[in-house]
Amino acid sequence: MDEKEKNNEQHQERGKEPDVLDSTQTVIHKALGKLGYSDEVYELMKEPMRMMTVRIPVKMDDGSTQIFTGYRAQHNDAIGPTKGGVRFHPDVTETEVKALSIWMSLKAGIVNLPYGGGKGGIVCDPRNMSFPEVERLSRGYVRAISQIVGPTKDIPAPDVLTNSQIMAWMMDEYSRMKEFDSPGFITGKPIVLGGSHGRESATAKGVTISIKEAAKRKGIHLEGARIAIQGFGNAGSFLAKFMHDAGAKVVGISDVQGALYDPEGLDVDYLLDRRDSFGTVSNLFKNTISNHELLELECDILVPAAIENQITEENADRIKANIVVEAANGPTTMRATEILYDRGILVVPDVLASSGGVTVSYFEWVQNNQGYYWEEEEVEEKLEKLMVQAFDNVYRVAQMRNVDMRLAAYMVGVRKMAEASRFRGWI
Ligand code: GLU
Image (cartoon, rainbow, N blue to C red; front, side, top):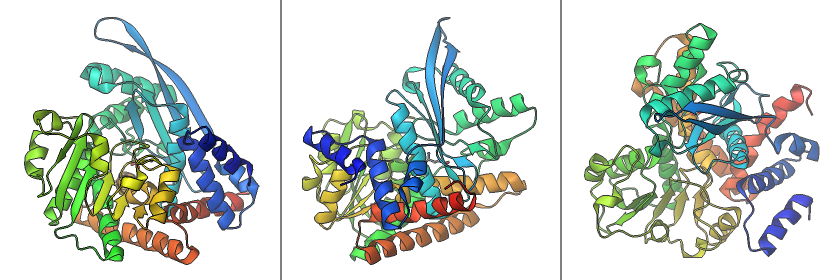
């Protein structure tokens, strides 16, 4: 047993699952081992190559000054600039941002984008801040990290609780500082500022493609299939719509406050219409169930589209779906993945299923660099092609090597990065 596995074993003895970074490192280690790479390669890849912590003073509306902590992690730039979102959330930690940057490297590798992974986060709760306060915080963050980001260095994007308006403020701040227009500094922008058609719904489109591919492999017809979605934010809400339009029955959806369930299928259009800007809708109803009950619903397809660590060792035995497609980053713990695999449940991992967002971000960046913009159909066609190829590739490796799809995805995801690092003479 190597040190990594021993460490995780100790966590288990203490009855605690390893944290997101620990488990990511364990799977990276396994993937590199299966590919025959040495421990030096693992040493390079287990942590971001660059990590910046910043303190951002922001003038609040009441005249006081509040200091926020922010991070930007750049995992590996052997293939190209690093790329990944910025999340605004009270639970953001340095460890989480590091793990998320590694996942971005894997996504880029799996879909074959010319990027390494990056990620940013600010410890804050934008739901309790005014618009001008969020604007000042966004601009302050860009000023604080400006030396290490840029269209050919590291390209931010939206993530949890950030959106196209925040991207617009960040792009404006960067362009002003550099004194030239820099649309390629950030993706997920509003269309008028160089955003791409199809970017807003891209994560959900990618998840939809993954669901279709997984359903095919499992012999499930989407028409009439029962699907439960945890989360009604960007990914969850578009996904509910796409699934509903494809003839599936959306039997459950949830938001931070609770979940709605109807075995006959929910009225998705009505719920989309009534949700507030943070995706909350369950507060309008009396007969709600909890987020945890939603995960255990009788259904064919389960999509965790909210936050980390939702399917754990504790509830993995009670999951009834045949397919779990991870639209969120890190919703299933390492031990839960093993339990689901042993039970024959197909888990399509986050680094594959949720890579539609960064894929269309890449298209946005390409369009910005060319100054030539594509129509929505072109974006969708290209996204579909890359995602189907990526799914096929990961599924084939999983079958051939007799491993779960997460490990297969990690194997596909790290390979090019390791090769590029070797050609550069780093390892
Ligand atoms: N935040 C998204 C993700 O986790 C998108 C990143 C991007 O578009 O660069 O994949």
